[in-house]
Image (tube, rainbow, N blue to C red):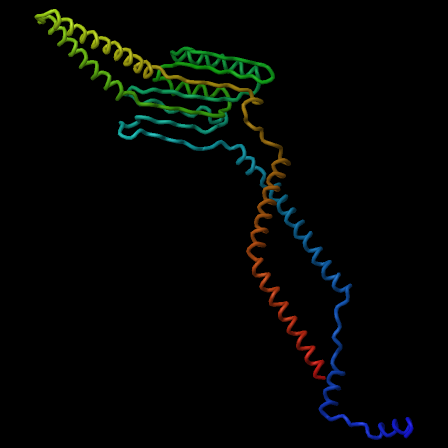
Length: 346
């Protein structure tokens, strides 16, 4: 049998397709062809995403600048505002106002004439205060120093020490003593000589110490009187010498107690005020920046907070994003397996 005869016989006996197979082939032929997106389409979608990121960053920068420009005064007030804290400390077990320390806030000259705390009347108290003031220049420093000396003299006080130096930056340090009854007036008047950088007033009660010293003095006087009477009645020289030694010791203790009481009373009579004057350049008071500087500082602060918020959101959403990515990958793999199964079945 020749080749042509074999071919003719095969053509005559070719199998006929069933209806189910014909229907499946027609269904696949009529379905639209599934095409993968081109690289241009993928690049276009990714380009949109890349454009969205700079747009979001630009929007954040514009918002921060807008807020910084419209609200720079608040930042300036926060930067230059003095610490408004007042601390009161009282010793336990002591009478009212036994010990009190007031650390005053830095203030501008408009608040300089506020009344300073005064000692309580009727009690012996140690009053000490310190002031640090800023003045404009060396001329103002000289004038403020002279006025401080005049204030101390007007209030019946005196100057303990003065240190004065000028140059590119001037400074003066004065230690003043004024009667305790005029101490509050002294602090109030001195605080008006410049801009308050720091203020501290401390009041310590000394009445209890004076009362204790007075009681010890009375007992020693009574003891010395008794020893003197015993010396007059002494019968032997040895006993007389022993009593004389005891009286000498008691008299020495009496002198020490008198000196201690005098020093305590002196501390209660006269208040000590330490005044430090500085020119603006050396006072450590930072001058407020321009409006543009404050706006930029505020904008940078807002950008920093926005970055913190974005980072926090990224950390919080990272697990959710990973789970969503895993689910998407699993569904895509399942869909590919189904397509491969259908193609193999056809």
